[in-house]
Image (spheres, rainbow, N blue to C red):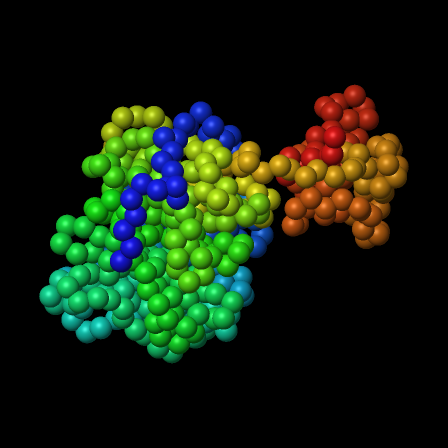
Amino acid sequence: MKRFGITIMFIFSAVSYTGAQDTLWTGHYGLIDTTELGYCGDITSDGGFIVGGESSKFLNGDMWLVRCDANGDTLWTRNYGAARWQMAYSVIQTSDEGFIACGEYSVAVGDYDMYVVRVDPAGDTLWTRLFGTVDQNDYGREIIQTSDGGFLALGQGYGTSGSSDLYMAKIDESGNLTWSKTYGYSGGSEYGYGAVQLPDDGYAIAGSYAYLSTSDLWLLRTDSNGDTLWTERFDFHGDVDRGDDIEIADDGGFVIAGRTKNAGNMRLLTMKTDSLGNMLWWREYGSSSSDFAESIDKTSDGGFVICGGANAYPFDFFVVRISAIGDSLWAGIYDYDGIPGDSDDSFEVRVHPNGDIMVFGYADVKTGTGADNDFWVVKIHDGALQQPGCEYAVGDANNSGSLNGLDVTYGVAFFKGGPMPPYECECTPGNTWFVAGDVNASCSYNGLDITYLVNYFKGGSDVEPCADCPPAG
């Protein structure tokens, strides 16, 4: 175990929320007078997203997934489960454009199994699996797709003594168990919350080791077969420490987001180690009595964005954007309705290919007369990223260097099967040839742009570029 005092590696940031970035849109998803709790989400290859958790609409509560397009409009919803309680703590899009979710399944009173559900792109079930040990409680907290097309599911298993071991199950693409292992120390309880696969096909896992009334942040490194290579425990203030999620830094080290209790107050924690688990730096962020992390994702500039909670219960969404060396670039608190006593909890953060930030959780929306929590998704503009821009004239579909009536003619011919508009500008992945032809700021090129452009030449509204790829200058 490594204990750290106040050294040059540590910086506490009493974060100012005046730097909070612009909210692009929010969406809530649920049913009236029922409880839908969102615990996870992922951005999909078409720019949309999926969010998962649980819904009380169904008998005793089912795992519930909601699939949406890039505008936040619902494409489908599905529930999965049986007569007892089920939930999703992790959901990702798979390489075949379907999805896989991991969570827990109530087998009987006081008996839970790790629950894994794989579905096709339309949400229809391909297979379900339960993993765990007989007469123990086993919970799933994270699932990742592995380089061989299979999956690694991470969580914890509780024995009859009440102690916990970190539990991992490696499964193939058809849901067959390849191996499962537990990890821990004697005399304590171990929990796993976040995992990444490394270039050598091994794994790094962030979690905690709890003993008596305290806990250490725990970092575990294994090979591709799940055999332990090394572990490190980190104690920051002699109280509660925990690693909630982990990412690989550009230099091959690890950046972990979590929480640490400092002088009675919980603080959102990030720390960086090298590839062997040696501490490089750590930071604390927050200014309320309780700030903590749930999820971390890497940004295109090598930095990171973290989401979690702020304030003692009831919580608000808390998002912190940091540089590659842990300096706070901006932070924001996001509250669904500003009503005191309502809790808005964020559990997953993902960076969109265009640089925007998506945060997934739930909020108390009060659309009915009873308990009414909904999945809540917030899309945020990341002002720390400098939009590169590129040289083009808005509306110049034929790449002539100017906007004129020939661009209308070119566009009409294209939609009738003519040649694709030429392009020289590409700002971000997916923003290629259409950016100049987009004149209504939709970040796409379609017949509506032709209509808009005709109206412009008749004295209508001015042309507007895609905000994700603005013209240089």
